[in-house]
Length: 94
Image (cartoon, rainbow, N blue to C red; front, top):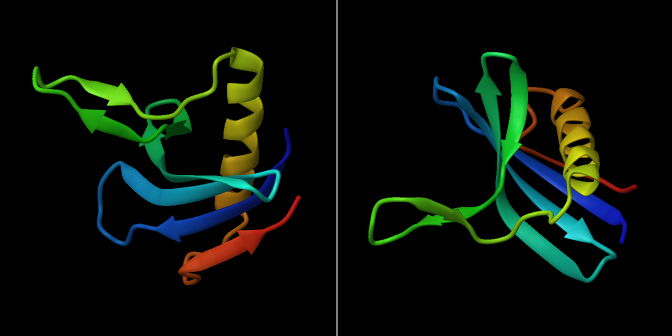
């Protein structure tokens, strides 16, 4: 499976949330609302989630192994870091 497109939508408000990301796989499957979050040890990604009746957040879609999660995070953060702040959305093909 290849990451074929990453689109970054920066968030202009102050806070830990820095961007929403849309990732396309193999030009045929898309995942919306991956988040770029600023943490104590640098930026990281959070997968799209929904709030349950008990108040917990559960991922809607997520990698099932750490190797792919690492690859996905590195590609997203690389694209995020290389996207100018004044650019609302950037498309990147791999």
